[in-house]
Length: 389
Length: 141
Image (cartoon, rainbow over the protein chains, first blue to last red):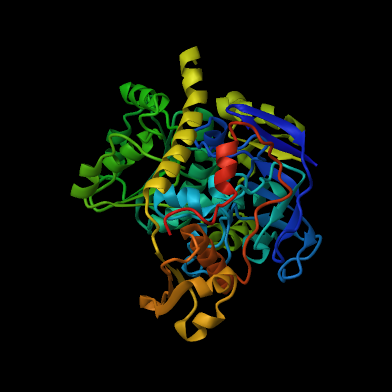
């Protein structure tokens, strides 16, 4: 079958790889019909997460049709249209029972790497390096889905492929940021990043009853999407005084909940970015935490900061003093998709959550390397590139 | 991007990966055998017996001491394994056995890696492939 393979730092190619096989009795094989780029893939592409092997298949956010089922699968049949959580979870360990699915104890076949790096291992993820289990990704014609009764969800007939696709990761991740960040009716919520995850976090905050939701980015096409499809306010960090505006728009208090949806390759104007970029390139830090710093500074006293952006290692100049003295709650997580996908599909069916506008570029899988180039360089107002295998 | 930056971008992760593997190996050489490993499985103590534990933990049972205790707060059962003096069993074998047993007890199965493989072996891949070939044997458990 055809698949998009990582060939080295900043090198991608569509190649021919063996078809996936059922390996465990709870597996299904899915014929991928839509699979989409994610900003976190760029960390793999750029070599910031050095646990890739030449030939690894990328992709973790996808939708498709079940073509084969293992003998223990109960919830799915051949022909089902399913959207799949990007994290692989058993559904039975203590973490899954707490609905912290990306922390599953039994979903990562290589726990040693992340346990050594971080103290304990999160679960595995599709197409996201050997630190996350080395699972083949979704930018391919077919994919094996383990623990399918837990992680694959049948899509209602009334929800289009283009909408349901984003339940797989972007919408789940965004919703988690608002939910576990503790958004309540009446809150002022600030979201850093107007990519797909940031937009979904902002939409979740709106639907959870926030009084004001403000999204921060530098790309006007994305901020336009926020105003048009999310129903939130916007700020451009290249032209607006972000700290001043957030203070002003929250009556001087600062946002109650700050959601960071940017990640380890954050940009910002001015010397802070140059400093972080230099340290990153010299390997004196692994991540650029610009947006996290800003979120911690902007957040109201006693407020909540949720880190949705993907980080891999260590950062410099982390404002621990602000965190401690302002009494903040800082939380983060990889996405607990199994917790949110059924509810998200319901909301998608009701029209409360729309995502089609995120798929700015739809193209055949053969063009995936070009799709990643456009996506990475943010050319042609690209928000997400969707591949059709 | 400047040529220097490109070189750093490409060489950096490779160096970091190699350094991590090398550091891991050095640490492994320096670290004496742990002899005791413990994890928590999300099943009540009343359902488990030392002699009835599934998977590879039962295969090494003659060479280790296994103790079960109720975990606090309804978190299940703590399984502690002590490697007996003179036992041929390694720390890695105990880690793998504990992880596989937990997965069998909780999920009814042990997850296998994706297959068939899509990667090719290169000099740069080899340290990572060596590490992941024994993915359940390493770590801090």
